[in-house]
Image (cartoon, rainbow, N blue to C red; front, side):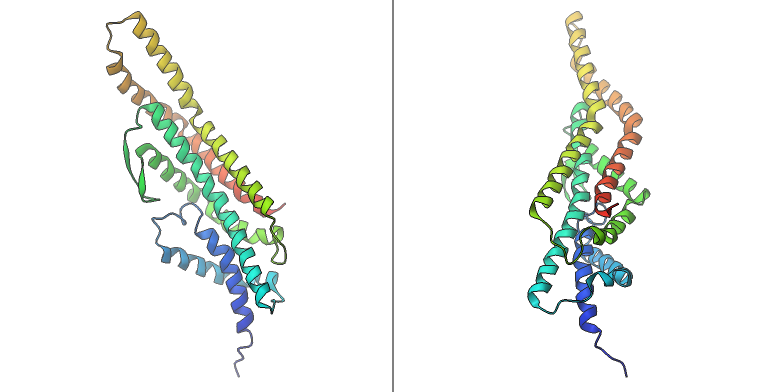
Length: 254
C-alpha cells in the first residue's frame, strides 16, 4: 500500500527551498528582468527546486511542528533569498550608472529608447551596455554561480539560524558602495576624455575665434567616444562580470 506520510515533510521542505530559491530567481540579472514573464520565472524556480530537493532536504530535518516556527523559518528563507538576489540586482546598477555617464560624455544624453529588460525609458547607450552585460553574465555561466550560491548559502545561513538586521544593512551598504565604485571605474576613461577634449576645444576657440567649434565638437565627440568605447568594452564587461561574481561568492562561505 502506498503511504502518504511523507507529504507533510515534503511540502514543508519544498516550501522552504522555494522561498529561498524563488526569491533569488525574481531578482538575478537576466532571469529576473521584467521582460521575462512571471510564469516563466516561477516555472524555472519550481523546476530547479525539484532538482535540488534531494540535495537540500537534510538542512530542514527534523521539520518543526509549531506554526510559529514554520512562519519564522519562512521569513528567514525569504530574507536570505532577498539578500542573494538583491546583491546581484544592485550590481547591475553599475552598468546602468556607468552607461549614463558615458552617454553624457559622448554627447548622446539626448538619445533615449525603451529599455527592453525593465520596460522603461532609458538612454540608448545605457540599454546597449545593460544588454551586453546581461549577455556576458550568461556567457560566463554566472547564472550557474547564482544557483551554487543558494546551495552553499545553507552552510553560511542555516535554517535554524537567525539573520541580524545589522548584517543585512551592512551587506546593502557594501554592495551599493562597490557598485558606485565600479560605475566610476567603467566611466573613468570617458570622464578623462571629456575633460581633455573640452579643454582642447576651449584652447582652439581662443586661438581661432572664427572657427565654429560647436559644429566641429559634436560629431568629433561622438566619433572619438565610440572609438574609445570599442577599445574599452572588453575591460568593462570583464569588470562587470567579476563584480557580480564577487557579490555572489560572499554567500558561498570558504
